[in-house]
Length: 76
Image (cartoon, rainbow, N blue to C red; front, side):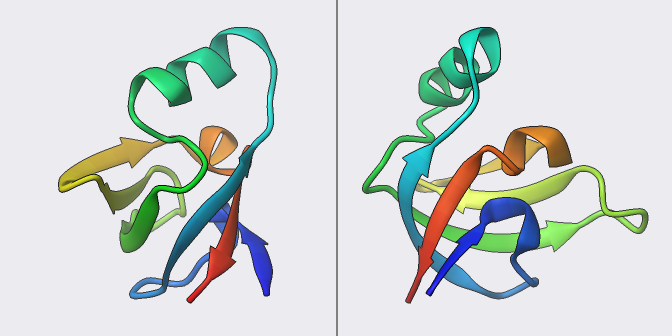
C-alpha cells in the first residue's frame, strides 16, 4: 500500500518509493537524504500537524507538511 509521508500515522514505517516536487524543494529533500529506497520511521507530529519528525538513515529529520507531501512511501 502506498501513501504520502504526510499521511502516515505516528509509529508507521516504510520505504521511499518516489520524491515528487520541483526545483528547490526536491533538491533540498535529496540533500537531506530523502531518496528512493531509504527506510523511514514516522516518529512525531506537532499538535497542529506541522511539522513532522521522521527517522531516516539513522538520524531524526524534521520536515514541513508541504515537504512531506512530496514523498511517496510504500508501507511495510
